[in-house]
Length: 449
Image 1 (cartoon, helix red, strand yellow):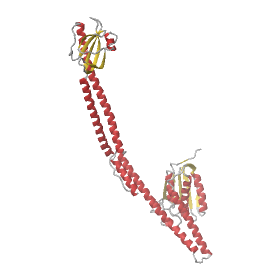
Image 2 (spheres, one colour):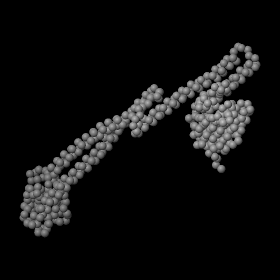
Image 3 (cartoon, one colour):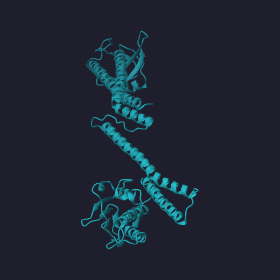
Image 4 (cartoon, rainbow, N blue to C red):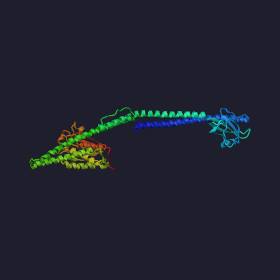
């Protein structure tokens, strides 16, 4: 069943319950009012008979039209003294006539002297014994007109109920159709996107209600999906381009080694060294690609000492770049809630980048304070046109193209910083060289003493 059909049924059901309650209330109120009027009329007529009998016991001898009611007077034994209608008294009536029970009203079905069955409203009241023996006055009113009026009222209320339910169903269908129009547009857009695989479509936005906000959120989601797919395509294209170069070089050197050309030992050694270097570059490139590709698949966070990670990375950098002076004054003890393996990779990428650009005899200063890691080298620094792009994937400046690498190191640093709720910035130091700041204010804190 569609949502529109369910909303229509709910609207019709709610209106049906409300109308049924209203009609039932109306019916019983009207029935009570009619009965109250009948009972009041019967009481007045009984009182008139009682007064007449008290004043003159022979004043009432039976009449078919005593105030519009049928009346009879009986003694304590149930013998009729005067009557305009004859109904055999039962035990309750005799108890009233004997003075042991108060007056009461009830509905009865009885036959008149002509044998016709009538539906009657009856009042049985005791006859005052001031001027005579106990007895009872019984008054009847025919309920035929009242029953007909109630039947007409029931019929009208049933028609009103059915008409209200039908109108509610029609109104519910119209309102739900108009209200769900944005949802149908969203559904159609989602189906077209699922069919074509292109999230460039947008749904119309308008208004300020929840459905309008849903449409805006849907468009935002489509934009994010489109950006994600575009980034994925760009990533695959860039990765294919970057992998093609070392693979081609590897294939060329392998073909030379396998060929029929005689190579002296020095040439063979140089080819093998090239193969080793290209293999290492390929390994680093693949590791970087995996790091970027798995950035969204986070493992469990853990606490670790960032200062220890930096110290270990500096020791590794001293081995990797023995001609560079590494200074680590001011490594403040810092605890980070995050991903240790990824942070180790990010710190190493910063130090490796600084070591490559420092050159022989250069120096690199590393400091950690207030949850911020600073790595500063004394190389050429960042060119103005390169600085906004150094954290993009596969970006390599003109000066860096002659050096090993694939342009993934600083991109990984940014991914790791954002995974920890931090930021990374690149700038030129005032007296020359590059300065990179990795800030982890949200995830870093001093250790507990």
